[in-house]
Length: 74
Image (cartoon, rainbow, N blue to C red; front, side, top):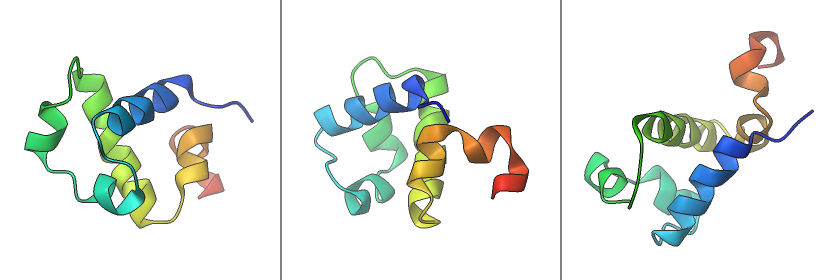
C-alpha cells in the first residue's frame, strides 16, 4: 500500500494555509481553497476528496488511494 504523494503535498499546502485540523479542513469554503497560494485545479479536486474522506472517517484510505483506485475496498 503506497502513500499518495499528491495527497500529502495538498495536505501540506492546507496546513501551511492555516487549516490545521479536520474540523477546519471540512469547513473550508471555495473562497478559502482558492486563496491558497499556487493551488491547481487537480489540487482543488483532491481537497474535495479529502473533505469527503474526513466526513466519512476514511482519511487513511484517502492517503493510500484505496477508495479511488479500488472501489471494493470501501
